[in-house]
Length: 381
Image (cartoon, rainbow, N blue to C red; front, side):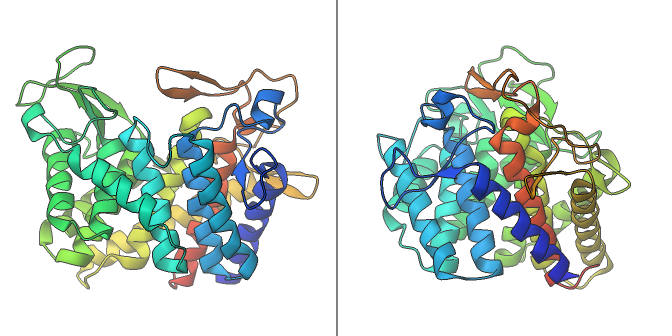
């Protein structure tokens, strides 16, 4: 079983490398992902590059190097990190806390798992995230600097990183804040965020903030991630209990026949892959031997494997490489050179007309295949 998923993860990796990964501006010792296929000139020349998508390229490369370590894969980790720092112009950080958290997670895993020295980048990002904590303003940490929107996409990955770098008390405070503020009592799912300035969304918190009640799959993923990390490191029962409840809510409301449904392009192309990555983390690492622990691990594994099977069956084969669909339960569509392209607006990358064109969608497919390998390697079928 694990061998099948290793082969499929290899194929997904090969597709991304063939279609997307290039030297940055022809500089030796760099690798970065072209943000679309087929690309237009400004994409091919990295005028557009999307910071947080590249963080997930590095994270997927860490997965591949862990699955089958080779010198070439390890060198690629260094090349991607170096290209990211160069293309960002100002160094490792930017104005978006969610972006920085995703890069911090990838850098930390590359260093911890493969010994790639990323201490400077990790340290700079860690302090940015730690210092952004603002309970006096209603958070949480905000989505971006100077903003009053405190959301799961920033607090989730940031708290996972802080847990992994040893700042457990802060990671736990962030997890508790998300559970108290952003969990929907009706569905058990995690909402997008809260605007403490009081404008622009429906529903209010006890503290007077205005909730954005949108439900996104990656919000569930990052909360599963930090609660699992805290369950492993602290053993406090509330963290495992939250994982039990959230896995069940995801299975009941975001899946059909255990397949994660929905999807999209642009930034949304990564959402389901992030959920799958963290469900694999639950399956492989959630501690405990109670019936509830075993059920959560089994459910998480089933969702990952069913989703990966669906995505694989619905892929296209183009020039001997898989092309994954934006929604795993439906057949992928082939993008063409004339398709309208992804645009950046309001801090978010909007989908191309054919979302399969977007690098984020193909990264998500690769991420899913790596997650399926992790689950299968842990003994689930």
